[in-house]
Image 1 (cartoon, rainbow, N blue to C red):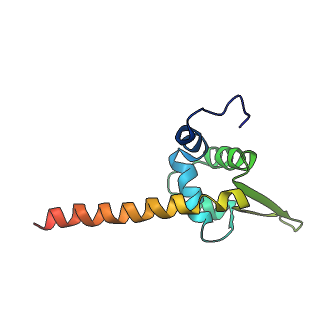
Image 2 (cartoon, rainbow, N blue to C red):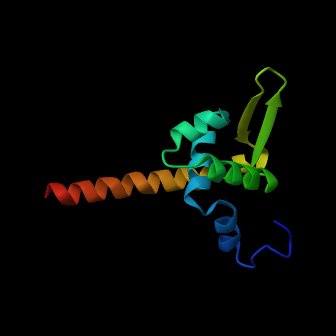
Length: 112
């Protein structure tokens, strides 16, 4: 994202970088370890190859992830969080904590 494209609001900047469903789920996975393309595609139920490719490219362009190509036959490519992407870990951790609390709340309401 260029300076001209960057929103004035910091929350809007964050949303612009990671604010779609697929980017959040990709980051969720990459918090665990580096993943190969097909591993991500198989784990992210419902994502198309094009959407995954587009999101990975955008995240790489924004500096959130790294793409490492290993010179093997067939080529081995891994995606991982970059240093910048690692700084997003607390955001996803907070979302996970809130989501668990919400799930417990909703489940307990249905039990009563």
